[in-house]
Amino acid sequence: MKVETLFSVEDLEIEFRTETGLVKAVNGISYSVEPGEVVAIVGESGCGKSVSAMSVLGLVPSPPGRIRHGKIMFEGRNLLDLAEEDMREVRGGQIGMIFQEPMTSLNPVLSIGVQMAESMRQHLKLNRKQATKRSIELLEMVGIADPEKRLKQYPHHFSGGMRQRVMIAIAISCKPKLLIADEPTTALDVTIQAQILELMKTLSKEFQMAQVIITHNLGVVARYADRVNVMYAGRIVESGTTKEIYARPRHPYTVGLLNSVPRMNMAQGERLVPIVGQPPDLTRLDAGCAYRPRCNWAADQCAMSIPEIQSIGTNQHSACFNSGQL
Image 1 (cartoon, rainbow, N blue to C red):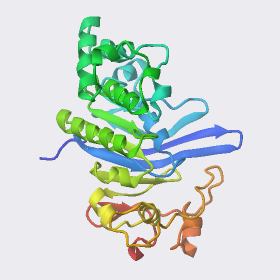
Image 2: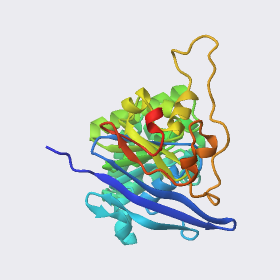
Image 3: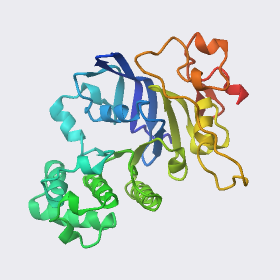
């Protein structure tokens, strides 16, 4: 029996008008997420990962931003067609989001308890006593000791890792069907990173909650994601199962990302291979492949047109004219 697709993005285009020109931050991306599945979106800063996530909840600032084209489907409804009142019911209630920086996402003048209760009182219609009880349970679930005391404290009383746990607790408080985590382990040490990702994986299994994890680090998602979408210059250049992409990447950018990640089986004296150059200026893209100036496999054809993403193998797709040579 085929599982119904919970969430999908179809040919999404987002642009920003700036003083230096038109920025096509997201340029025709498509992907889907099934119930209980963890999908990662990886790529360097500025490739469009966070903007695409913000668009799901209607948080792209307009102006200067504009969703030019595409669909964002959730349980059979196009979120882009919803009125703001209907979108507020989806935002936080059916789709939760962990924002990139918890210190700026949490209100510094409101206690943790007030901020946790707000969403539950709005979406679950809990009274103050019920919301407090549920908040205590959530803080225990995410591993914060002495939750009753912590509810009365403010964000500056918490460490970075604990604030991130609070953000996770708020995001899952209404038992959403989809959780979007934008750089959930930014600025955390590797031990706390592992704890946060293990917690999210456990919650995904427990609640059958689909997840979209946005990060720049392929190494972080290797253990936790079922599928990976690799983004570059506003486009998805490779997608597939985590196992397939790690076994044989089929886009030069994915190869570069993997070569720059330390491995346990590296030989003595073996050096990491960084990706040369810098990400492109999105206001100055030409008719060719955006990765071409940094690519070891670039050919004349790459300067003439942008390769379309094509199926390679069973569950893998790549947008490269030379995928067969990798």
